[in-house]
Image 1 (cartoon, rainbow, N blue to C red):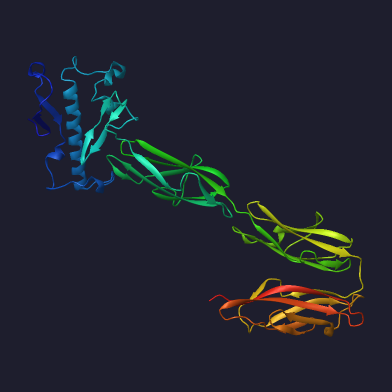
Image 2: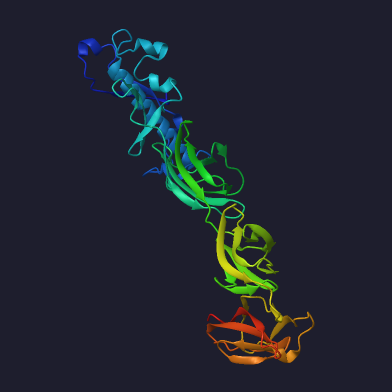
Amino acid sequence: MVPNFIASIVPFPFSLFVHEGMPFLVAKIPCGSLTLLFDGMLYRDTCDPSNMSEYCKTVRYMDQATLNVSHEYVESVTDPFSTLGWYDISKLDQGEIADICKFVRPWWGERTRAGSSVLATYWSNAAMACVPGSRPSITIYEPQNGENVHWAKGGATAYLGASAADPVDGALTNIVWSVDGRTLTGPFASGPHATASSLSQGTHIITASATDSQTLTATAGVSINITALGPVASITSPPNGAVFAANDPIVFRGFGFDYQDDALLDPALIWTANVTKFGSGKQVIKKIGTPGNVTILLSVINSAGLTATDSRTIHITPAQAKPTLVILEPPDGSAFRYSTDQIGFIVDANTVAGNYAPQNWIQWSSDVDGFLGIGHDLPHTLSGGACGITVHHITATITDPSSGNGMSDTIVVYVGQIC
């Protein structure tokens, strides 16, 4: 017998009379499998297709040997004579049960693994497939099907995770990802862990696929929903129900916050009075000359195009002869870290005639520290905890001593820090 052939007697389930013409199972064995490099177990999982070490060559030789033996065994058991054996005429020239799975591709694999041995598959009419199963499998474990992913400015990011395995090759890492049919490219775009970025709002189909050494492919898919959170609008002044004269400069203050964009910039904040736009930004000064009730609306919009509103109703009376005042500095909502910080308090204050108001007409106070001082421009400190935030409502008031008429303006200032 030549070195690359091996023969063994097999107890076939046929009578010796019928089978006497073929008493042996003959299978071609690779030469490399007859000269092992070592004694002991062969660990196939350490050998990927690119590994050309002598150890892995031996593994592949042994796999081919068991593959050939199992193929010839099935063929001998089912087809001792070409005219008397099992044959499926619909498979034409690949009709023998042991050959169908070797030549019909790519629906089934020609080899599989049982324990640590690689074996040939064979056709099963009951399963209408090549058995034992040899196809790869893949499971997406992140994200979950139907999961909601928060949108972020510039698009959402979805973190992808999948595991794939094959009966012959073991774990597969050559996982290809796609979103809505488009294959991901670039860094972190493939493999068991990947990232899909810049996803728009709406529903997206995430697909993962892996291909084994037999070019069989397994595919899995999940659906995710990209949703954005809406912004928040808040009017801090004037308070609801406030009363102003038709000639009063009214300070409208508010802010917009968004979970994706953080604090919204001035162009995203729109003010209207009875549906008529009169300004934008965190602070707008406006006189409303028509007496009556006025609905003030602050509308904000985020980068996702979602909006939010806040409203107040104020009352406008006929014009009155009184001085006017507006706090210019610091801005409403300003924060200072230390109680030793010098804060510049500045107002725009005018007499009934529109002249610069005298310094002693203007008084500053804090609801925490009490009276602060007088004047258009007052540098002063505010109390605040070393490990906490103190909230001050700062009020500037102007009073005309000749008539007793006046007005006031209030802002909020924060002093302190979180330890």
